[in-house]
Length: 81
Image 1 (cartoon, rainbow, N blue to C red):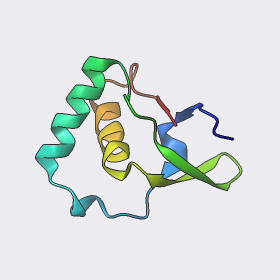
Image 2: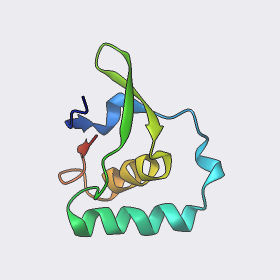
Image 3: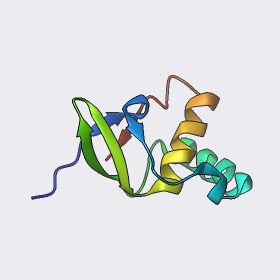
Image 4: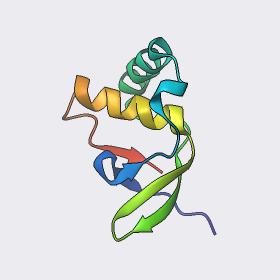
């Protein structure tokens, strides 16, 4: 069964290196996430500890969510996953 939650960006990590994505893509996606008021497609996460998660699918979106948090802290604390 698939469940959707809002998860704090600070509790998520990724095994993919941020350097494997173009900075311009991340910047553009962060702006789109802010404009849409969230991710259109939730991140797929795996619980990796108590209150900690690892990205299974959506690494680029995760890095964009981290970037948007730097742009607007109030709108960007939580992501749908």
